[in-house]
Length: 175
View 1: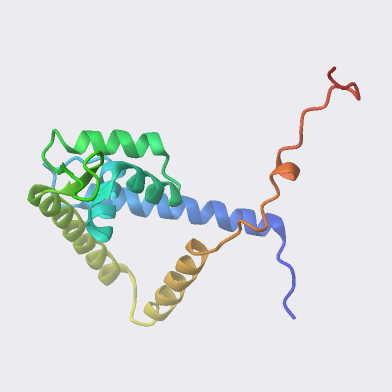
View 2: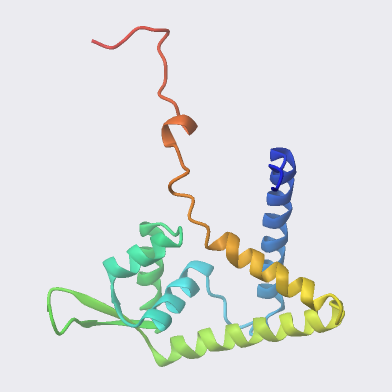
């Protein structure tokens, strides 16, 4: 049987993990070798979503991004910003002409590919420079743990009423 972990230890681990991930993500962005491309993370996320899932309506795109904890308004702003820059375009849905489908343009695909390649190249160099051959198994195990945490479905454990109890008015009720 495993012991229940101390909540304060878990909180410290969670804080360290968040800081480390933020630093890694920021550093990968800074170290990318494409200085002429400045694309907000939200727009890059929308482009990646369309590239992985195929063309989508605005509503489908918003729903998919919301599942990844990106708000509907942020998704809409990102989608609208991509068109004037030539990274995305809309076309009519052949099944329902009232709907528009969002597609990534060739320029959008090249932008994502360039950013991904440069960030990945930096990360490869950083791993080669700092992680010994003995530590690579630990890194692989850590990545598996991060994937496990990312995939955790805690929706059945969330008790909103307990986390946010209704305001009390000293025992009086509104009439």
